[in-house]
Length: 261
Ligand SMILES: O=C(O)CCC(=O)C(=O)O
Image (cartoon, rainbow, N blue to C red; front, side, top):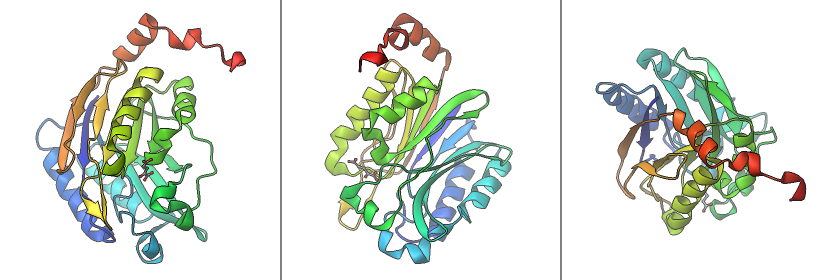
């Protein structure tokens, strides 16, 4: 499974311009070594313009869903569509979207853990649905958003469901970049699964973002990583066989004794 991850610099509060950027990026990215699956960052339509959500957020995941469906179809790729600010009834959510290459919506997820350090709880409602995995090309996958990375129970729940590839879409600040790197490695090693992350670069409202998107294998080896401060594309081909091999060699899952903790 070939990946391309867009470590993007998001334009604050301008969904139209960000859609143009994503379209141009994908157009270029499929020209050489066409990926099976592409990944966008958290809040890629608006960035953290939370005080302007009335003006810039989607409503019921539109127009982002239609836009991603059109691109998936046109370029014949699965899209882990990052997340977008999204109004549902009268509340705003941080909603992640996954669209397959036929344009079917295969997964939607509202960020469960809202990040106090970026004022999310003041403006957004946390997701209330149980986190679940989804499948693309027969591979069980999971998707979490940024601050969710700090809650190992969530990734473990997905791993116990059979998830082999965990995606993390993020706007993770540089101030805590060491946590970003270490926690991704930890989630990959402890759950013996691939981690594919997509973080933004650039700055907004005095906050610098850490980039350093990563593709980590289930042994904890970093297969690809982005810079801290430049837009770029990370590419890697995942050998899914590695998951079962490592789970057999170091049988963590059968050694668990959950009734004692
Ligand atoms: O947990 C952190 O340090 C960063 C989290 C974050 O920026 C987010 O969830 O958007």
